[in-house]
Length: 112
Image (tube, rainbow, N blue to C red; front, side):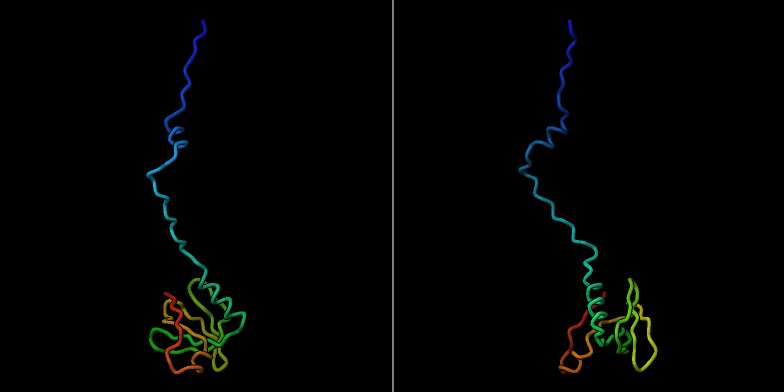
């Protein structure tokens, strides 16, 4: 006589194969980094666009963005030395030609 063992699939395998009717699809979590800021800096650096950087204390710095990283940007100025500006002290920035085109408030790029 042969001793036969009954082989049953595990309960977890059966649950995986059954369709889920009540379970709503989970929403994906939005990404932490969209790279929009990086794209903006690269575009302005490549075009050597004159920029106006408005600081939290109200000071305006005019120049071309030469370099950037996670925490700061380097602004090349014609009328003074190059500056390394920490991003947390920047209120907003805009293209310098937008300042001359209209008397109204320019489109801001908020870094926070």
